Image (tube, rainbow, N blue to C red; front, side):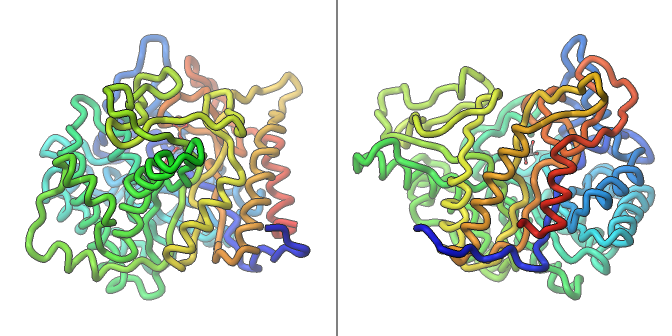
Length: 465
Ligand code: BGP
């Protein structure tokens, strides 16, 4: 629908930016930090160690100054579980508490609202070795970790996010499981345990954080049918339920989405539950929903002939489609990035409207951005007009969604500064701030403001006008 006048971004809109611990911090074994599953991936020959990341651990103060200069209203970062409790369920590491205390204090003194993700893909290795999310002990360990976080930081952190992209960890488990990839049956058991862990954290947050707000941060995207053939529409509905609503229905209503549950039963993936699980899940209502959005997906009806599941864009690491459920479709209306990711700014509006319509809860965009091979030019600057164009188009659609009636409280593009990509090394950059290192040379890690930094600064100053 067209509007004569667009609604403004709210005055207290949280213009932010995101990162996650293992992707920016570095210092993976310093000051008592334990190893996480991310710290044991083998680095290919000739590639510098990704665990140094952007060395934010040692550049913290400088990085916060840059955030303040850009005018950020909020900074979404994750806490490394292994910096707080090195083995996941044992002693608390006071140096880890001190690091995040300092970060939070520096943010607040610069009037930047901290938005804290409790767990972003970096399960403590010791817990992983003891069965990881397949074991219910990890649920207890997460609850204890949550208590440590709330007791130490809950006086200053108002916005909490429980688990980053639980749905991606279930659907694309390769990036979080060094070694053997669990079977689907096991993954959905892990998923159930993560639901319990998230619910326990929500309940604890209510008890321990006076003004705390807490919610999940799944990766949500509208799924389009490739054609208007009813069988394609069914496939799109099915995949949207299995990929998205399964996770948000559980977070908001504390119940399994019925369509997704039928799928779990049909495939033999339904998790084993214990008495009291569903009661617990029902009690844990979030205050808001984080949404990571990159791109929509287009699907067509399954053929169920053994060819539904295929590697994404030739990448054997990421399979899309599922036998008997859906197959990847083509969308000739959408462009792709140089990394083959679909770009669909209107899809952001579609996605936000669908989520809001289902749940009527405040929404916070916790990730969205463009990965590109940015270059440091000879004049010492980084020109990234493509990123400005990408974000501009997405911000416009966010404003359209607000005009549609969506209660959108903030927007945290991925990422504040360049960092290690989950799937594609360091050459794929997302930041407003360039970090002078590459995949084969750590160089001096100098921070350089990209053109998009100055552009976003203006966007924030004018509150999106
Ligand atoms: C999301 C993750 C982020 C980040 C982003 C970009 O799924 O939450 O951690 O990595 O995707 O993905 P990539 O780094 O693979 O380009």
